[in-house]
Image (tube, rainbow, N blue to C red; front, side):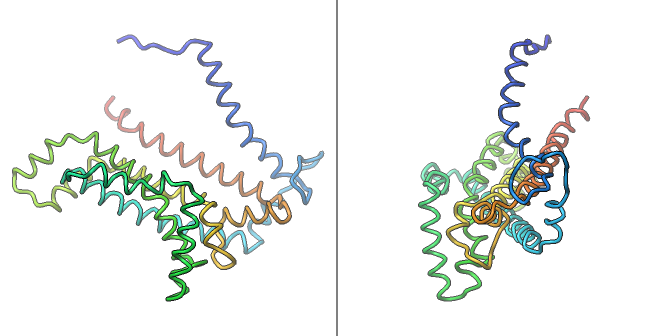
Length: 270
């Protein structure tokens, strides 16, 4: 079979679009090495002062740890809820499945400001019973992030289930497999990559969430995006450029690992 390769013009256009999208991100790299106390391009000399500040300043470490904790909890719970819901829709095929899916996807459709206000009133109401689960708490932030990220995980898992041949589930059912056996031994192994992708997506969405977080936090639960926003608002701290570079590097490495893992079965088959 003859493989059609893109022509020189298509390659040039793709490179131009890629450069247009990446240049704003790459511009922050030299800024992170500036010796100045303001966000500016380095003038003659380079400095690692702001990278050192990420280690020396406990606020940055605390925000990174909190964002990681919230991201992991959100990823695990949201993926579990989304997978359970998607499996129920796929296996039972209820009469109003479209309505149920649409209801779950509402947080994705509703404007973020509306969701933020709703979650704000919900968490402030819960604060009357316990400060640990209400406004400006780790559990409260996690709950809000779960509400905002579950729809994305549901979409990812439903897409993975759409590629599964339903006959393998019917065969397992015909051979006497229980519901749990069908789920854990037949269906989940076939959508494992989709579930893992959903978990990764949810973690990234939780890690970078700022709109809702600004409404439901104050001084105790300060995530990394909120701390960066505070730095830009108050004193334009160049350490923000340094942490941005670190996040870009980590994101790039994760994407490269995902691409390598995704292409590995193709190499094994060859």
